[in-house]
Image 1 (tube, rainbow, N blue to C red):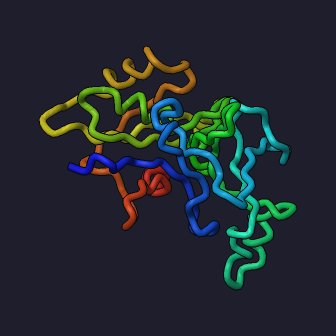
Image 2: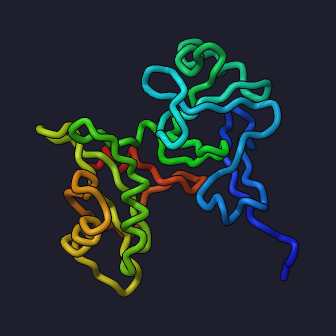
Length: 209
Protein backbone atom coordinates (compact mmCIF):
# COMPACT_ATOMS: atom_id res chain seq x y z
CA UNK A 1 0.00 0.00 0.00
CA UNK A 2 2.87 2.36 0.85
CA UNK A 3 5.82 1.17 -1.26
CA UNK A 4 8.12 4.00 -0.13
CA UNK A 5 7.45 3.56 3.59
CA UNK A 6 9.93 1.91 5.94
CA UNK A 7 10.36 1.44 9.67
CA UNK A 8 13.34 3.09 11.31
CA UNK A 9 14.45 1.86 14.72
CA UNK A 10 15.51 4.74 16.95
CA UNK A 11 16.37 5.52 20.55
CA UNK A 12 15.83 8.56 22.73
CA UNK A 13 14.82 9.95 26.10
CA UNK A 14 12.71 12.83 27.34
CA UNK A 15 15.84 14.35 28.93
CA UNK A 16 17.55 14.49 25.55
CA UNK A 17 14.54 15.67 23.52
CA UNK A 18 14.41 12.14 22.06
CA UNK A 19 15.78 11.23 18.65
CA UNK A 20 19.28 10.35 19.87
CA UNK A 21 20.05 7.50 17.46
CA UNK A 22 18.53 6.35 14.19
CA UNK A 23 19.04 3.21 12.14
CA UNK A 24 19.67 4.13 8.51
CA UNK A 25 17.61 2.42 5.85
CA UNK A 26 20.58 0.67 4.27
CA UNK A 27 21.41 -1.07 7.58
CA UNK A 28 17.89 -2.24 8.44
CA UNK A 29 18.79 -5.88 7.78
CA UNK A 30 22.56 -5.92 8.27
CA UNK A 31 22.20 -4.32 11.73
CA UNK A 32 19.01 -6.07 12.77
CA UNK A 33 18.17 -5.26 16.39
CA UNK A 34 20.21 -2.06 16.47
CA UNK A 35 18.74 1.37 17.19
CA UNK A 36 21.34 2.94 14.92
CA UNK A 37 24.08 5.52 15.30
CA UNK A 38 24.02 8.89 17.13
CA UNK A 39 22.48 11.90 15.45
CA UNK A 40 24.46 15.04 14.61
CA UNK A 41 26.02 17.02 17.48
CA UNK A 42 25.45 14.21 20.00
CA UNK A 43 28.23 12.17 21.58
CA UNK A 44 27.39 8.67 22.77
CA UNK A 45 29.51 6.24 24.76
CA UNK A 46 28.98 3.02 26.70
CA UNK A 47 30.60 3.08 30.15
CA UNK A 48 31.55 0.33 32.54
CA UNK A 49 31.12 0.52 36.34
CA UNK A 50 34.42 2.42 36.57
CA UNK A 51 33.07 5.30 34.51
CA UNK A 52 35.23 4.55 31.47
CA UNK A 53 34.20 3.54 27.94
CA UNK A 54 34.09 -0.21 27.34
CA UNK A 55 35.34 -1.84 24.11
CA UNK A 56 32.89 -2.64 21.28
CA UNK A 57 30.81 -5.70 22.06
CA UNK A 58 30.80 -5.18 25.83
CA UNK A 59 27.79 -4.11 27.83
CA UNK A 60 27.64 -0.95 29.86
CA UNK A 61 25.56 2.12 30.60
CA UNK A 62 24.72 4.43 27.71
CA UNK A 63 25.85 8.01 28.38
CA UNK A 64 25.17 11.06 26.21
CA UNK A 65 26.64 14.53 25.80
CA UNK A 66 25.68 17.41 23.52
CA UNK A 67 23.61 20.57 23.11
CA UNK A 68 20.31 18.66 22.88
CA UNK A 69 20.76 17.14 26.35
CA UNK A 70 18.73 18.94 28.99
CA UNK A 71 20.37 21.12 31.64
CA UNK A 72 18.84 19.35 34.63
CA UNK A 73 15.70 18.33 36.50
CA UNK A 74 13.32 21.12 37.52
CA UNK A 75 14.09 22.26 41.05
CA UNK A 76 15.88 19.00 41.86
CA UNK A 77 19.62 19.69 42.11
CA UNK A 78 20.32 16.33 43.78
CA UNK A 79 18.78 14.34 40.92
CA UNK A 80 20.59 16.54 38.42
CA UNK A 81 23.96 15.99 40.12
CA UNK A 82 23.36 12.23 40.21
CA UNK A 83 22.48 12.14 36.49
CA UNK A 84 25.57 13.94 35.19
CA UNK A 85 29.29 13.23 35.30
CA UNK A 86 31.74 15.61 33.60
CA UNK A 87 28.96 16.78 31.31
CA UNK A 88 27.85 13.25 30.38
CA UNK A 89 24.23 12.32 31.07
CA UNK A 90 23.63 8.85 32.52
CA UNK A 91 20.64 7.35 30.72
CA UNK A 92 20.20 4.33 32.99
CA UNK A 93 20.05 2.11 29.90
CA UNK A 94 22.35 -0.84 29.29
CA UNK A 95 23.68 -1.01 25.75
CA UNK A 96 26.35 -2.37 23.43
CA UNK A 97 28.20 -0.62 20.61
CA UNK A 98 29.48 -2.71 17.73
CA UNK A 99 32.67 -2.09 15.74
CA UNK A 100 30.81 0.24 13.38
CA UNK A 101 29.36 2.42 16.14
CA UNK A 102 25.83 1.01 16.00
CA UNK A 103 24.03 0.88 19.34
CA UNK A 104 22.07 -2.08 20.68
CA UNK A 105 19.89 -1.53 23.76
CA UNK A 106 19.97 -4.46 26.18
CA UNK A 107 17.95 -3.44 29.23
CA UNK A 108 17.34 -0.82 31.87
CA UNK A 109 20.14 -0.64 34.45
CA UNK A 110 17.64 -0.79 37.33
CA UNK A 111 16.06 -3.90 35.77
CA UNK A 112 19.37 -5.76 35.49
CA UNK A 113 19.32 -8.93 37.59
CA UNK A 114 22.52 -9.72 39.50
CA UNK A 115 22.63 -13.38 40.46
CA UNK A 116 25.73 -14.79 42.12
CA UNK A 117 27.77 -11.91 40.72
CA UNK A 118 26.54 -12.53 37.15
CA UNK A 119 24.55 -9.88 35.27
CA UNK A 120 21.32 -11.10 33.68
CA UNK A 121 19.37 -8.93 31.24
CA UNK A 122 15.71 -9.73 31.73
CA UNK A 123 15.11 -8.81 28.09
CA UNK A 124 17.30 -11.71 26.95
CA UNK A 125 15.23 -14.21 28.94
CA UNK A 126 12.02 -12.56 27.74
CA UNK A 127 13.03 -13.01 24.10
CA UNK A 128 13.55 -16.72 24.68
CA UNK A 129 10.17 -17.05 26.38
CA UNK A 130 8.52 -15.12 23.54
CA UNK A 131 9.78 -17.79 21.14
CA UNK A 132 7.56 -20.40 22.82
CA UNK A 133 4.38 -20.91 20.79
CA UNK A 134 2.16 -20.76 23.89
CA UNK A 135 3.53 -17.45 25.19
CA UNK A 136 1.84 -14.18 24.21
CA UNK A 137 4.19 -11.96 26.21
CA UNK A 138 6.53 -12.21 29.17
CA UNK A 139 8.37 -10.06 31.69
CA UNK A 140 11.31 -11.22 33.80
CA UNK A 141 12.38 -9.57 37.06
CA UNK A 142 14.76 -10.36 39.89
CA UNK A 143 13.53 -11.89 43.12
CA UNK A 144 15.55 -11.86 46.37
CA UNK A 145 17.51 -15.03 47.13
CA UNK A 146 19.51 -15.84 50.26
CA UNK A 147 22.41 -17.46 48.44
CA UNK A 148 22.54 -15.77 45.02
CA UNK A 149 21.30 -12.30 45.92
CA UNK A 150 18.72 -12.41 43.14
CA UNK A 151 17.27 -15.00 40.79
CA UNK A 152 15.20 -14.46 37.63
CA UNK A 153 11.45 -14.96 37.88
CA UNK A 154 9.18 -14.95 34.83
CA UNK A 155 5.69 -13.48 34.54
CA UNK A 156 3.92 -14.89 31.50
CA UNK A 157 0.70 -14.15 29.65
CA UNK A 158 -0.31 -17.30 27.73
CA UNK A 159 -1.72 -17.11 24.22
CA UNK A 160 -5.53 -17.42 24.13
CA UNK A 161 -6.59 -21.04 24.15
CA UNK A 162 -3.24 -22.34 25.43
CA UNK A 163 -2.24 -23.45 28.90
CA UNK A 164 1.54 -23.92 29.14
CA UNK A 165 3.01 -25.32 32.32
CA UNK A 166 5.73 -23.63 34.33
CA UNK A 167 7.87 -26.75 33.94
CA UNK A 168 7.59 -26.68 30.15
CA UNK A 169 8.61 -23.03 29.94
CA UNK A 170 11.54 -23.51 32.30
CA UNK A 171 12.72 -26.46 30.21
CA UNK A 172 12.34 -24.32 27.07
CA UNK A 173 14.65 -21.72 28.63
CA UNK A 174 17.10 -24.32 29.94
CA UNK A 175 17.70 -25.55 26.38
CA UNK A 176 18.55 -22.03 25.16
CA UNK A 177 20.13 -20.15 28.05
CA UNK A 178 23.00 -20.50 30.50
CA UNK A 179 21.85 -22.20 33.67
CA UNK A 180 22.03 -19.08 35.85
CA UNK A 181 19.72 -17.21 33.43
CA UNK A 182 16.91 -19.76 33.57
CA UNK A 183 13.85 -18.56 35.54
CA UNK A 184 13.43 -20.30 38.87
CA UNK A 185 9.68 -19.63 38.88
CA UNK A 186 6.97 -18.85 36.33
CA UNK A 187 3.83 -16.94 37.26
CA UNK A 188 0.89 -16.73 34.86
CA UNK A 189 -1.06 -13.50 34.42
CA UNK A 190 -4.03 -12.34 32.35
CA UNK A 191 -2.06 -9.22 31.37
CA UNK A 192 1.21 -7.49 32.26
CA UNK A 193 0.92 -4.23 34.22
CA UNK A 194 1.64 -1.23 31.98
CA UNK A 195 1.78 2.53 32.25
CA UNK A 196 -0.28 4.80 29.94
CA UNK A 197 2.45 4.75 27.28
CA UNK A 198 2.47 0.95 27.20
CA UNK A 199 5.71 0.24 29.08
CA UNK A 200 5.67 -2.81 31.34
CA UNK A 201 5.79 -1.81 35.00
CA UNK A 202 8.42 -4.21 36.26
CA UNK A 203 8.45 -2.37 39.56
CA UNK A 204 4.89 -3.56 40.16
CA UNK A 205 5.90 -7.15 39.37
CA UNK A 206 8.77 -6.98 41.86
CA UNK A 207 6.59 -5.44 44.56
CA UNK A 208 3.82 -7.98 44.03
CA UNK A 209 5.98 -10.76 45.43
